[in-house]
Image 1 (spheres, one colour):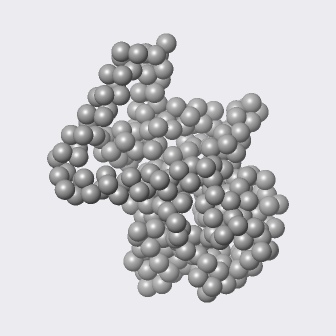
Image 2 (cartoon, one colour):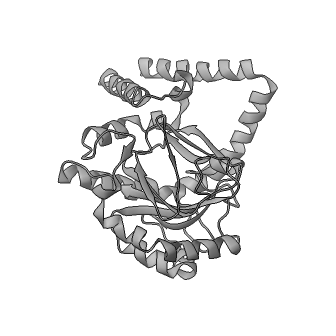
Length: 299
């Protein structure tokens, strides 16, 4: 049984690694969070109802049309949040999902996050909040800002239960401000939307002359069967709600994000070790993998 489970895990990691035209170096893939979620994501991809392509047509999701129809209302609330400096990085290292983005200038204001409670969103952005609540397939949403000179490094998102929707609110309207998904670029435009599969390698840059603000949403991935849809919904509600991060005091903090505060502190020591001796650091990582394999073998 253990070898069957190990075989499924290895097959799942290889599936994730070779999906698409662009991939991470294999050594990095082994330690990437998408590898730990690989068996779940293999299930999501196998029973997905949408094509296995980096970009998807927004027209396939007619329930999202009200977002574009009301984009100026959404934009006005986003700009008010920017003016109030509410679109910001996490203040207490308690955003497990997006912590690595903050060092390059990326910022966010949560409007919705699965079953977590964000009263700040309802109080500060009532129109956008109400609009999002009226569309059940939207599982998470935020205002996301990428400043002039900001970037996001190549990565895969860890959970394949959703698809990513971007709606341009205040953008440079310039091809120098773009996202690249599996080698295909898209540059944001005010009032225009794009949908993509965030489990492909993607990265972004803003080399234009102004900041970019978008509405960033996670849309529940449509599945072929009702039971698969139900399982996807349960996993999202259980796993992703645990990763909730607050905008303000009083917003919910998920259990995983609370634990991340501890792991972030431990990570400081890991980074010091890597800076001290990169070779020793790499050898230690390999030794840990070998140790885990040996543990599985002897159990």
